[in-house]
Image (cartoon, rainbow, N blue to C red; front, side, top):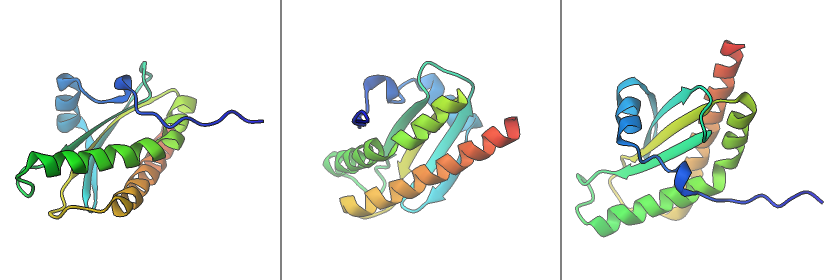
Length: 136
């Protein structure tokens, strides 16, 4: 019987380093998949293969309660869908940092966030796969 897959989002997988975030915004690449803008950067081998951060602007969501809810939904959707990308990065012995910015202007439903996060993760998998072919 094959071991059960765990869906976790531990402390070391969270992007907290101010230095890393600044470097990501300066040197990273980005793409948009409404309602997200995604910044990403692939680096060499690191202690953790995948780190992610989440943000919601206060321009459209004045109440912190709304911003925190959206971030909670984004983290949960990411937590359930990141494993394949993480395994791919482990096999390639690379690491990536990803930053999700919510750019929509209305409170989303969980189902739409889950679906869009899946699109973003599959696009990141495609990008890391292309980078591994170029590096080989």
